[in-house]
Image 1 (cartoon, rainbow, N blue to C red):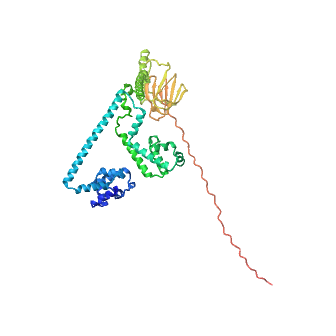
Image 2: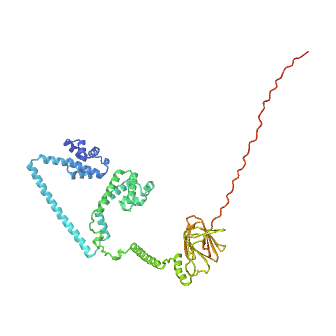
Image 3: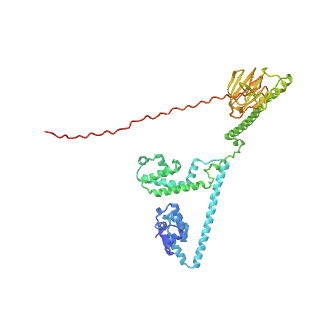
Length: 487
């Protein structure tokens, strides 16, 4: 009589006098998972791989044979644990000497069997490598039939899992007597994909998520155990992933055995990409533009030197010695406090010092040069005629010449600097001062005195007088009287 894996685990735990709570505390496995293992309820595990891990930890804790337990997990129908238990009990019941002899005979027999297996493997490997080497050296390639046979013999484990799933689907479909077209009508899955699922050709499906969805719908329609099918499919995917990272052996179906790829030398032209050439060209062009701009700027600065015109005072000072060398003339110099005032009958004379200077540039006896330092109102009358009236521009020079007189009127005396007959008079007043000067050929500079304007007399307006008002009088009221009737 055989016992199941869960019963064997439960029996081993009870022999040691342990309960599930103690085992869960020691192994850090939840109690309901341990109970599911003992009840053979694999579907209650989170996944098949996690259930296998829990089983390995549980077997290590109960000091059981891990290989036997894992074989029972993968192939429960081939394990007869009760017989092995009986054998172990019989071996323990024997004497120590007899048991030692039995163990020695077993070890010797196992050693001989291992040696024979190793020799057979060496012979097989030697024959395979010799055949492969012969084909490689002679350059002969395997025929398509040989390749198909090799593929059937050496299919990876993941492909075998997918083929077993497809076989289950095909067997259930034939059992229900359904065709591919009927299933397409109810599941809306194309026949091409249904055939790929039944053949285990996962690579022919669009993607892994779509393959998982199609397989789920197909298994549910055929009334199969969907959870079991999906667990096997996930195990196949995990196995295929592990196989992709595993090193590949050189076999008959591998083209690397016949011709090795040529190793190409890296050319230096590989480093000259379009991005590198474009970037370097832009940098060189920018550098050239900077040099050209710097050279042009320095050239423009050399050519466009700003030549400042000489000031009026320098021109006047340079012209004085020229006039002094030509012909003597009289010059009138005014002291700061000396002024001539003419007002009808009164005249105050100035101290005039005669010096010998050259003739005037214009040939007229009265010459006045005005240099504007600020903006100001200016009116100029030459020989009784107005020649200029307006605002001066700072920095400009104004020249006026007359035969008898030149009269100047300004609203800002500090804004004008005056030269009279090439003699500097200077600034004629303060800021905002209204100034009037008359330059004549006989008396020099005259400052006219402003006339007093008569002040108007204020006449008082008569104020209105109040008219007398009439006083009200009391009027007596008339009281009626009754006259007696005389008969």
